[in-house]
Image (tube, rainbow, N blue to C red):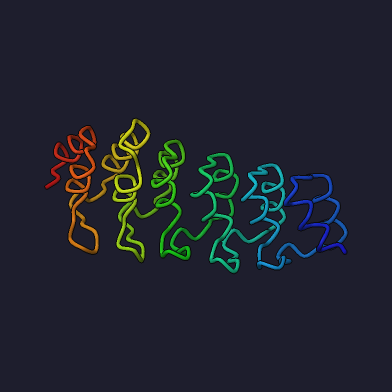
Length: 197
């Protein structure tokens, strides 16, 4: 029951129960029916204090579940800067890919998580990583974004971080061409100023 108790407590954000389960000998890398570890459950639900305790106890930030997510990859989806900071001391492998072949930066760009993108770009994560669909974070911000202020900020952050503004998708369409096609005038102007073609 100790392992099951740890999984439940991590999912629910019950720090005292997590601490008790660890003290009782629960396995930090125990898995639920979807191969999720306690740390992945805590990261998914943004229970930062629980994640901090699990990391301090030695939990693996790179443990993959059956959807090819890890605690670290999930932070790009949730956009939680606090969780990202809680996991960084465990030195996550930033090259591990999700089921779409992407790294944490890409879903954060897609979802408009400005604060997360700003912070994760300071970690040395690869700004021009291309996923299995042929998209970079810059392309996802344009293709899946609405051109509004958050996406404008993300494009600026990516440009400032050295993103290749002419890195085209798998069909040869550039970020600037995508922005023009979608009527994202401000983003198109940012790309042109950065040498976009």
